[in-house]
Length: 257
Image (cartoon, rainbow, N blue to C red; front, top):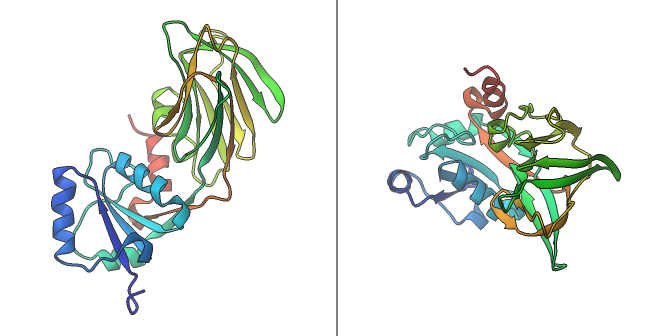
């Protein structure tokens, strides 16, 4: 803390708008390194915010984003002035990422964290065939599809929503599983699961019908088995202005036309 004020760090994406905003902010505030900061101010879009969250995940820092990108779903509106007043009123939202452990056809093991979703995508012209188990019980012996999404509440309005998946309110302690272009069973539209669920997805013909698994931006190709669970030991702190809090934005998405 700097007196009664929080110590701030500043990170900005490389876009011209974000860089100009960073110059304006540095002319009016004093910033320290991210390691010394109480709050990290992020200038950019949702992609840069996700990148920052991944890089700072182990540091347990509070993150306050201001939109200098496009959609800015995870960001607050940008304004140079009144930053400390905004931070004093900001609401702290805690997110837990998904832990993905993927095994490939070569026997390699990869582990990654996903703040939004873990997605499974076919690698060739042939549809994927997936076996889905929940808590050691096979719930769907064969899903023929282009892919599958397992999402957190925070990520439910992203790729999941584009695939006609459900929007999950924050704090609901739920995960959503949404198929991408399901062919068989044709009427299966996915599932809503408790956040404690342990999910295993296995391609049935991994050599003939190869499948990749993607945890946010980390892709693992040619998988044979992927396990997913919520990483409750990881806590991400996002700060939002009261009038633009994340829970309200997720609720509003359900009524947009």
